[in-house]
Image (cartoon, rainbow, N blue to C red):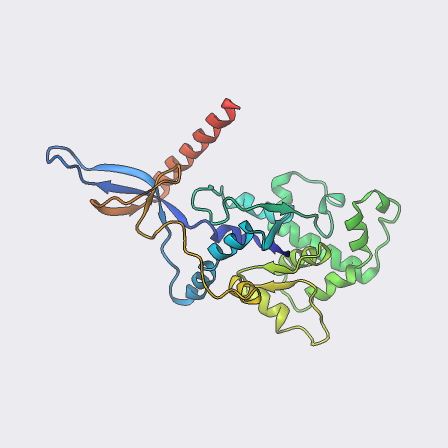
Length: 287
């Protein structure tokens, strides 16, 4: 089975719905216009980001391949940290809802070396700082952890003995791209075939800017590249049509007399998030 580590941005773009309110005309003339709250498909990306929309359009196909066990999807804690500051990901409208996603270990367990609260630990600057430390240790052959190294996870111990590989992956990358380099390294040491991303700059930096002698053990790939490698030529359709109104429980409704879909702003988003919180609270109380 093809093993794929999935970048955080892919999980984000897999959420294809926006919260909305819609105005619905009453059948009775005396009745005022009613409003309904739910979701509708996000507007497609156009212009300079049209290429990204074309990549997103392949995600339903990848979800189908996952559900039929032709590919296996993976994530890990460092990728999950990135989502802490991006808000929740409701399952309604998530292309990968219903897919099995497994966890792997990071190439190096950061908490073995850095003790801090979770919110600080998850910040991008903290991860970039740790990546710099790893590169410094690779240059100086740091041995300060030799006495306690045996207490570290096995994979961390192995990766500490091969920090030069992380340095090779990071060569020529920007400070910010080293986070993705760490993800790619994690994919390598966990035997992933691919690292799925929608970051064209990082992928080009890894596949086109490296010396010819540089060998990739896990291939960074866009969704279109992955399906092409698997010999897939036809796209699976989206679950929801662009003119569907979707209720909070995921039911698609074709409202024929909608006047104007009103895409919402801060006030409705606050109400929408509150409803999701109340729903989750009630569910947990029932358990």
